[in-house]
Length: 112
Image (cartoon, rainbow, N blue to C red; front, top):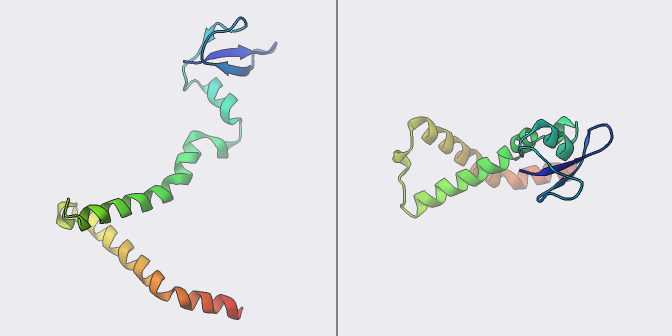
């Protein structure tokens, strides 16, 4: 729980791990005032936005992890729910198709 330093308008201007001569007020790390201080009022800088922004990358990490676990025979594809099997198969095929057709996309780009 950080200690906060406020200005004359009671707005947070600094956070500290330990109390200082100017700070004695402690707030929870998730307190809305602390979040406002850390990310501002820009909706694109909220923790929720950051998590949403990184979701696509995490999906790829999870796909790669599942493929690795299957390759190493730690799990079998049939261990996964049918819906997950279907989604992984479609994504795997799509990625493979994109890799196989990459020269076509490059060639078209060069023509334009």
